[in-house]
Length: 249
Image (cartoon, rainbow, N blue to C red; front, side):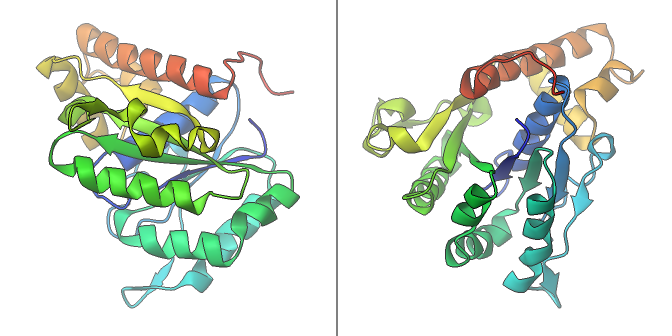
């Protein structure tokens, strides 16, 4: 997983991008890596607020205007490190980031420097379903012609996404782009208000799983419920990334 870069991108806000970024970072930590984490969201810097992950805030706007030039230092840093990098990008900067990636041929540049790129994006059920699907389709188009892969996260806390009775996996834009998709990771809705409440509190407190486990605010059963969520997600990430338990040398 060294020399991998993980971008969390989705044009729809409030669907769990920062949660996904934190889970990817914590997954890498669980495997013995030391990921470099960055937050480029000038509006909701939730990822940056998770102190246990040492997330660097990247200023990409001046006077409230996003400037593509300000993305340059981020990508120079990615090129200069062998550690895995996790970047959380806000909904408001989805289009500027996508434009920067395309116009600067970032995927090709990173590949030339031995970097593997993964775009993590979220699909939800409920009202945001169609908007998140539109974001996914745009990202599949963005990675076309490159070696970058898309990791599709199915966040079921707003329901399992179905499209006129068809599941996400069977949608034409999924099946015809199999070569661009690294895999699907499901954040399962356990139909359990206690788990939802526990996860919400963890997010509100900007905590990692390890911090939850050592916190007095979370009692035994709360810790157990949160641990199960992470166990399930980490198992799915193992399936996407090869499932190795080896520590980096």
